[in-house]
Length: 309
Image (cartoon, rainbow, N blue to C red; front, side, top):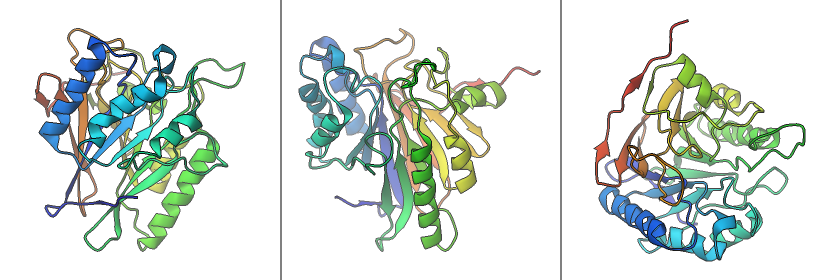
């Protein structure tokens, strides 16, 4: 597996593509690919992270070939990339294991299945190393599932307690190896946590909320674990195509990506695009901005203040 390292200028830049929704060709797929090409050319990232719904498999003529079409934009540029799956990637025609088997065959893919004894495919952590080869930052990926598997609970799936236990073990080990100081870390998943709704209601946020937060009905406690372990500075989700806000709750910055794909719902006044994330070696924090389809770079978004109660 290719090592991720901070650049000589001590930066590391990630492009988040989310909800690409590649289907079966046509103009919408073409426009999506052109947008991705434009973003990669302009930003020259060190890593691309797909946060789910790369394809909409029940609408695809050939899901695996359409997935290939989507990620080939990154592969041909020889950019390392990672992926966590969404609820639409494996709805009907393929399984998560089949899709992860496909991912493992790419030269620049860093995603792995992860432990076989916990829920999902694609629970893993990537290290961003310093010049000496030591981990200097961490990138956690979580499989947030599809739909609820409990007949008496409606709605979307959730990150399970076994996945949270895995994260806690990983985080504790890295902190111990770092002399007791948590390494700066980010987390990526598709379906937003319930705290994405809470942060909008309670804290100052920046960005847009044009639809409700489509989070699971069950809160399994991942956010509490993130706060307690102290390494994850920010989380990045997709799923809700016309939300793109960020807000900080209990020291963790909860961020949406910017929906990338044209083959799915959106708003005329909400251009497709990508979120960009920049880490700096030795610093706890990150910068983030949006790059839109027309080339616009959005560094400041409108402020939302919660209603006073």
